[in-house]
Length: 554
Image 1 (tube, rainbow, N blue to C red):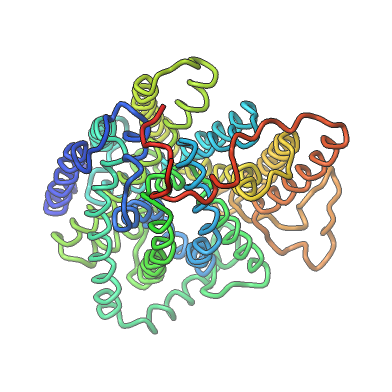
Image 2 (cartoon, rainbow, N blue to C red; image 1 turned 60 degrees about the vertical axis):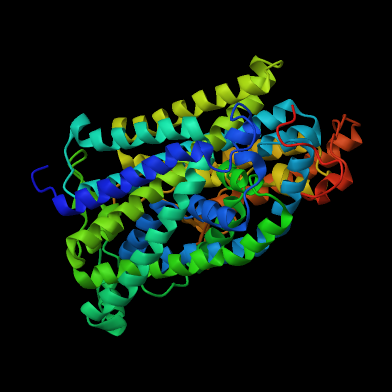
């Protein structure tokens, strides 16, 4: 820690202090009822307008890890890393109508979480519990990954010690985050998101214009990237990547993009931002405007090629002794920008970690409070007790994320997030499809969830990564020749054997098939389908409807 970049660190710290102040002030911003109610603390009073929702959703979906990991993947693998671009384009037309229906039924019935909706739709505490646990488990490593992005920035500024000393700035940052989230709830990240997004847009506009002009133009950058990625990897003997997709990874690219798009709004934190909106028109406007972030993401992804052209090499993590690929973009900024502007860029990434981390911890806390604590531990909990429990749970969730970073190799948190994406995708039948039809029986949905979860984990466990020596959980690319159905390999020995596919997508197909078969059997056996407390008109309710449930009602 002797090479601290003081100018960068001072600029970073100043902007961090600014957003900290905003975080505490947010408790009085757009104040409605008491924060001792989940409608207010966990959903910001359910009254965010178009601009606030746009910044909140943008800050929620486009995280610090996105801004460092996507370019890093492009840096190491080439075109495959660009999967994030089509998935963040197709996601909005896919989720527009389901998001509207989820907002309406949740506003009508007072639902705070997707598991609340499942509980009301199917009358099944067990199915709701499975959805809640899946959401919490999938969200925890996502929060930890925000710390990975923040630590990459801190290391680049020279704070790269080993042991607890190296993690001290991170601990301070997340203690502050925990305090203002506890006090202000969802209003804190909503207000801070304004600062984060303005900084991100400034940095990327400057980077995408200034850096190519400095490094010889885009033609030179792409040619350099093409030549570098084509060189054999010393560990595998094969090219590291390519600036074009190959015949073997095109299907993986497509299924990974589609699977990621289907999963994105199943994450509890994404739905939390939707439910905090004032009305259906706000959501419609946002689904039209949010692709602007996808444009920025595409520009950021290209920085992976720019880093290759600039000769950037990953910084060694002093805590693990291994190169940290997530430092690629911070190192690019550090080497090419003036110190003061690099500080601004680092602040944009760092603040970009705080916003989604806050929203994610709130969403996980809401799931714990409404679908585990109130359902199984204290059924008679008052709104005030629910809010208190959620505030405490949000602290525990953040602490857990910090411990993940401190106690294990940060690379493992990336593996956990890979697992989380496959897991959250298995809630699609019970959450998204159920918004339109109740044809699936609750027993079928539980059986489908079990099969999707189990097979998804088995497939991920069997994927190695020769580049880093990992035998299990080595990535998201499953060779179809290795696809096994009770020991039967349907594609082994065929031309499709080397074609790769996203295991989450395969697991989802199995989930839906099993859910359908068991639903037919359950009806044939006349099992009770459970009570549906929702009504058809609930799915079309809007903010000005007569007799709409009051915000903050018990």
